[in-house]
Length: 342
Ligand SMILES: [Zn+2]
Image 1 (cartoon, rainbow, N blue to C red):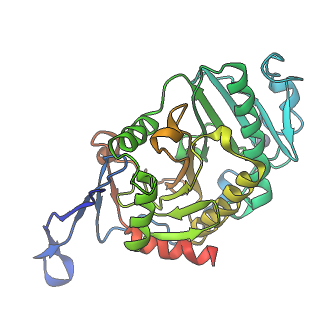
Image 2: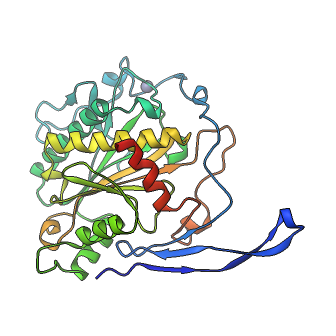
């Protein structure tokens, strides 16, 4: 049903060890059947850093931070009480506050821990992630009850400046809109173009099944399949695909615990690769999502490592060609992440 397009672009490059003699080099071009993006899997240049990140560059608080425990109550504001009863949301060490910068009809910022200004990737354990995700989930539920016309929700994160984050203090962000993100729209289009099979399997079921058959399975944690995508959009990309949920409003605390468990494992794999920065996005499919076969999914990519003069991981290929150029095959990456789940 799904078409996994792959071809070798058959490049040539001079070999330095053989006096510059041109040799054949394989450049694998793939088109992902879910989002329609194309990707190049290249050989040679490795963007992964060989040493641990220099966390001292950012770990010390330098001046004002709106998310630290001594300032968060004066630097942030309560939600309107008609939307959030009492105006405030907190759970464990986490807090959810309104975003000062409006980028969606309803958005929020979640702070994992106001007492910790900086976290290394190995500090993101299941408990820390679960509380913050649950608190963001409560906000989503409240928004969707307050304004039932809103249907496209996501919980996302930028971590460290290389990911686009403007603040060091670790946080998450949500979007709740009347319109879908491009990826939500594309996933819905793909689901509609590939109706369920006679035995009820969705296009997401088919994609996960193919990932298992093609060497890209990472783990099955119960209600979520963890895989690497056929044609990644970014480096070290991993997908978490819910087997039977389509929207953020379907999530129970148990589901958030499962997301947090898996995400902590993926971040542990990132830590092993000396990575430090990441983006993730958990995206729901709106009102028609379940019916058309959309499945709730979280996708995570690594971003350029923390270094004084780093090379951005985004080139003209990604920004202007909408095509990722990846130096590690998703099949090999799946094996490495799977070790963290075993
Ligand atoms: Zn802080």
